[in-house]
Image 1: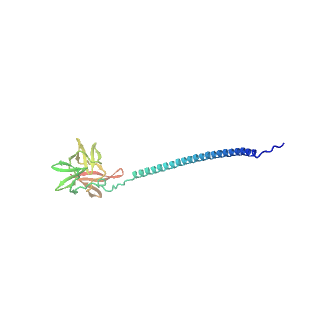
Image 2: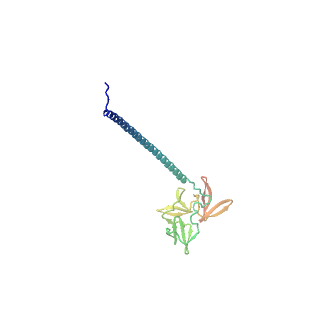
Image 3: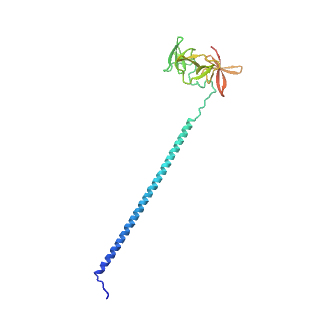
Length: 235
């Protein structure tokens, strides 16, 4: 005999199936949402990794630019340090051209000049330059032989003649004396790179000579450079 469902039973069966469908739908939705969240997290991690990679590359490029810039600066510094200074050695006084010329009159001497009394005259001495009083002024002069100083100027050149040491600066020759230095006559044959300003130029039998402070020089070649040799003393 066929059973006929009542209207009361039919809704009960529909509700159960509906609940199952609803649960399945919600579970699928949660799984899909979880999957999307995982993918999103992985995407963020991948983006972070890319950003970190790009940042590292940017840092490396910046560091490389800094190193290149540093090398460029080093090159520039080296190039500046390697600049060649051209010296005009064609003039006999090239090394002392910036110093006061012999027989130049000045009103005042440098404040650091020291007084040296010699032969009844109160000379003034400063950095290799000697000043002699003249009326109310001073005149640049060669020092008298035998005057003594405690220190010789920076830039003195050592000359060895017959196993004796001399020191030369701007036309003046020194020798050690006790704990000082005394001015002496130059040794014949001494070679110097430059002579003082105020020299006189002589032509004798086609040869050129230079006279300053009573000392006669002639130009000679020394290792391919023009030097000046003491050949005569006129005092």
